[in-house]
Length: 177
Ligand code: FES
Ligand code: FES
Image (cartoon, rainbow, N blue to C red; front, side, top):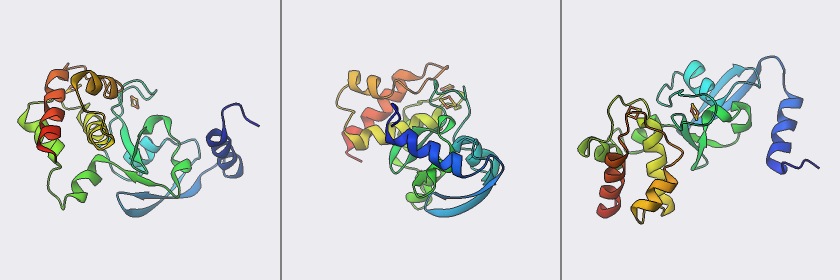
């Protein structure tokens, strides 16, 4: 048995049985089934950006340290650069584009708050910040600034918009939206 537990064992099995050449992978992204032909080594981030033209999730470090690529898989935050696309078959992937679609084309309350609170400068980290912020509000991890800092600590902003990002999260929390 793998010391890494069932999740990694399962991923290993998926990769062993399919590939190493291109394989057909069906992903459910923002509620729609999308089929792509990719090698099993392709990350979810590259599948989204390079094969599905969903460029909202950003590639910052491509090694799991910046959070710019944050998306949700089954409603939980994941780093798309460290997630193999093939392991997402049968799961619901949600990107920043899906957040707006879920609101009927309107901006989500957190997106509105980022604008109101001036919570970005260059904007490169912003999609990942917003996917994390919405998730932490849902998870109930926005009770105070220390908690917000802790649960947003995986999302780096090189423009240092942190005080404004926290203000945006507080605003949505206090509005109860
Ligand atoms: Fe994924 Fe930086 S691009 S964590
Ligand atoms: Fe520029 Fe965050 S707004 S990196």
